[in-house]
Amino acid sequence: LARRSDPSAIFRDVFRTMLENGSLPFFMVMDKDYLTAAKVVETFFDPAYNTAFPMAFTADYDTKKEIAEAVLQSLAVLREFSAMLRAGEPPTHDALRALASDLADHLRAGNAPVMADTLLHFSGDALSDIQGELSVDVWMRTTFGHSLPALIQVLEGFLRTREVTLEIVHDNVVRFKAAFDIVQRMFRRSDGKDFTVIGERIRFHTMPTVTGLRLADSMSEPMIQLADLLCGFVRTLFTKIKRGEILSADELAVCGELLVI
Image (cartoon, rainbow, N blue to C red; front, side):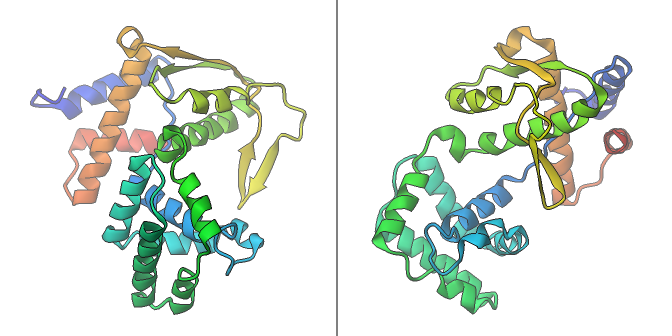
């Protein structure tokens, strides 16, 4: 498709054919930089490590969102924290203190001195706990650990009221067995009290509408190939929008259909 002179027009035909044959797409769109910023907040502002905050702060999503948006403006902090996540091994106490200090400087420059001051007094035990959090299995340090659980929440919310069941077929990616095991434990009968409302959003604890999850080789699964194609196209759209580029008529048409869906 990328080599064709009119890839958007071809994709529009593919997308229309897909919809006409009942292939309904579901999306979970995530910004990796924002996820990294959110992980910074969940690390350095977690009451379990940062004693300046009460445990109730764990559920203060609005404030944590504001902090994450502030962290998002510091490319240096995001770059250093991302490196720690990718390393997969415990960073030193000195490295953690240095990063916390850089983050404090950024927040102080953004007129949040009280929030900044909370980052300067981590105990040795707290830093050791943070070390453990940053050296967990790979699936918890990537977007996969967020995207798969988030996507199945969207699926369950749609399926439950329509009495539809399905089997999930996923590309057989390596090193993510633990994540799949967690998801599969949700495939059980509902007791009628299997959800929690968090900030006006419903979070399901079971998925009785799913009959199972099967891992497959994408080379032999046309629907996985179609999903890859669709995700690639949508990612291209977001990249163009982020760069301020003008979308073609075919790209706008697909955007409109996606919004309707």
